[in-house]
Image 1 (cartoon, rainbow, N blue to C red):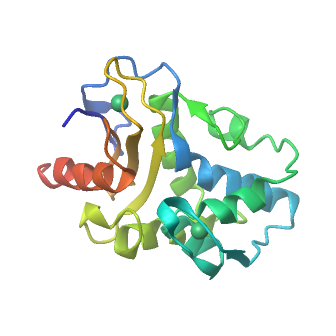
Image 2: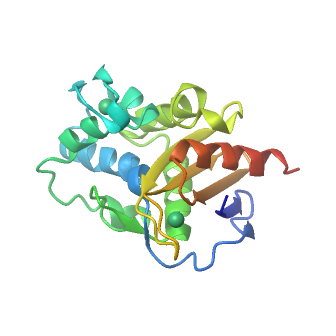
Length: 206
Ligand SMILES: [Zn+2]
Ligand SMILES: [Zn+2]
């Protein structure tokens, strides 16, 4: 399995381990955009999140009625497609040092990792707490549960492959613990596998 990762120490803000070839070069990161898309929506809608119906989703799943926390935990495409529909530019990207959130989002791995750290640091700001709860649920029972670390925050994604030997898609996961933040890309595997890899890499740390 081809795994690229970027690991940051949250106390020093330094990248402590990485094998990512060019972490400042934007890549498609799929559903990693969803927390920022959510915040862009919230900013335009009085920091309220809707409850929506998912009748058909990725890999034939049907998520049914769900709010923001469940939508993030299970990475519901239908929920976020409805949320993104007609959404005007919000300035959220600029606030988090990443491109404006859109469905086909491309962003630099280093910037994505920092944006998630920033999001966790802003837990007290309007609209942020439900997003962080969604990422906590993802780690506990959602697409990120492969991380197998208590209290972690996780978001997974799947996006088009950019490797020389093309695969249908590459999996991504961002994970935050109290001490570390990690971004993982796995070639030709889903985001759930990237979350498990993130767990494996984090578990070996002091
Ligand atoms: Zn869904
Ligand atoms: Zn690939």
